Amino acid sequence: MTERERFLAWMLGEKADRPPYWLFWGPWRTTWKRWEGEGKPAGLTHQGEVRRLFGAEQPPLAVPVNCGPCPRLERRVLEEDEDYVVFTDTWGIKRRDYKHGESMSQFLEFPVKGRGGWERFKEERLDPDHPERLAGSWREQTAEWTRQGYPIQLGYFPDVGIFGGLRWLLGDEECLLAFYTMPELVHEVMEHLTDVYLAVFSKVVEVVRVDVIHLWEDMCGRQGSLISPQHWEEFMGPCYRRVRDFAGEHGIPLISVDTDGDPGQIIPPMVAAGVNYIFPLEVAAGCDVHALRARFPELALMGGIDKRALAQGPAAIDRELERIRPALAGGRYIPELDHLIPDDVSWENYCHYAASLKRLIHDC
Image (cartoon, rainbow, N blue to C red; front, side):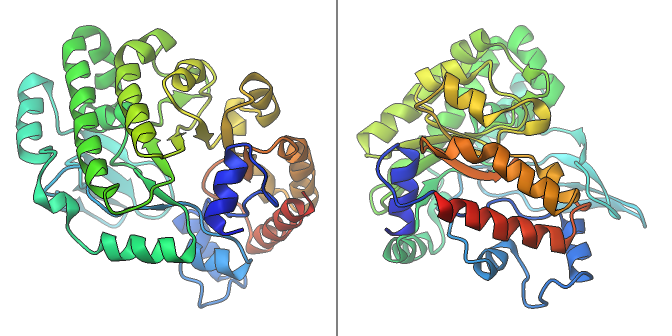
């Protein structure tokens, strides 16, 4: 089977020779630096080369068109000293980053404040038909990916998401308050973002065979979803149904959602609106692949291996892989880590994990 054929068959519950072997999540920047002092081959400069080292396959490749702010904002440094850098990113978000370790940015300011800010940003950066959205060599790239039998997706972090886009524009707390204080604006932002995505997608599918539409949301934590299932249905459901209808019209079989935390509360309305693939299933947030498989047998899953086990050594890694083994029996589950690899993981432990995961997959 080609890598695309295996991925689609496995995730749709059809006959496949085995699950895909991806090594999807790469290391933190500080983890990579640690590995450089622990024997990682010098020629490996990114996760794609690590995949090749261990004989892993290619996860879906995102068509490199612009679904976010367009024209793209340039990263601009505002302040910098020995320890911190303050900058605006490609969405116009003002951030503060620590330079000596790995952590989330401190988000200082977001580009949209109220309706006036939204109208300006929409006019300046969110024209669905801006010609720069389809610039570049994506047609040639996707033709080569198709020739090689790789799966292809539309959507990517952080530029394609319904809640994700709202959050990136208004800010975390501000967007959550807006569901109550400015519900009309929330509806308008989500609907317009969907307009942008589908306008770009419609041009791509004219020339590219697409296998999955991907939405980045990151709308959950350990406590569950950041909004209620009722709010998900009211605000996001109509947008997701538009995506589902587009996928159906163009023969795109998978709609995937990336959200950290525990999405259990909002999986039912997501599935009802067309989502059939979700990841990364964070163990520390209470996600369990066996419980999710029992509740949602038709939902494709990816992730669910506790990344914390990799810091504990081979025995803990082997126990964790044995824990998730039963989930492979019914298909529709790709065993993967539940997020990026932190810097308490040694190169030796990662090599053990990669080799052990490969054996597990090929034993299926």
